Length: 140
Image 1 (spheres, rainbow, N blue to C red):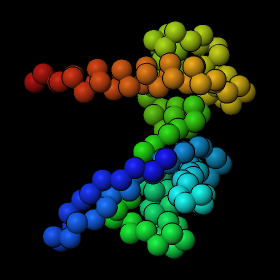
Image 2 (cartoon, rainbow, N blue to C red; image 1 turned 60 degrees about the vertical axis):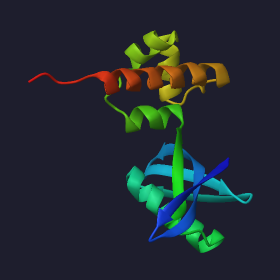
Image 3 (cartoon, helix red, strand yellow; image 1 turned 90 degrees about the vertical axis):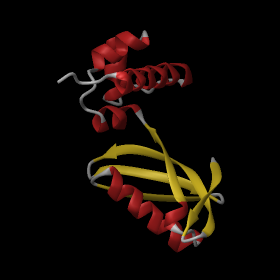
Image 4 (tube, rainbow, N blue to C red; image 1 turned 180 degrees about the vertical axis):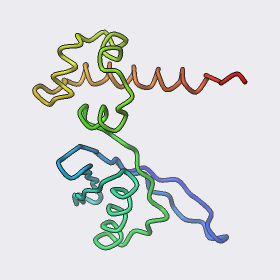
């Protein structure tokens, strides 16, 4: 999916392009893929910023896109999500999502893969947790 908006850079109006970045873990770190004009750009990196930089470079090389105009919307597979956000406790997320913790462990270990309904439950739970954390303050 591609979305666009406009940004102003040096008084020049530039079209901002939002692309879906699918992120997975592999032996070398993170792998990612984006689709643009029916072309699939795939790369890997040891960190998310490195992966994004490499993909922007690929989009510049193959699609002639200005890297400054590219924004990524992150989509993680379950394994990559719990690797990237390793502070999340699998059993607690499972409980909050209403998913059996053994089943979520199987998703995380890539023994099984969630269907669309289970993936949506996990996504909603992660977003709820993020909203709760955004409201939290530290008292000094």
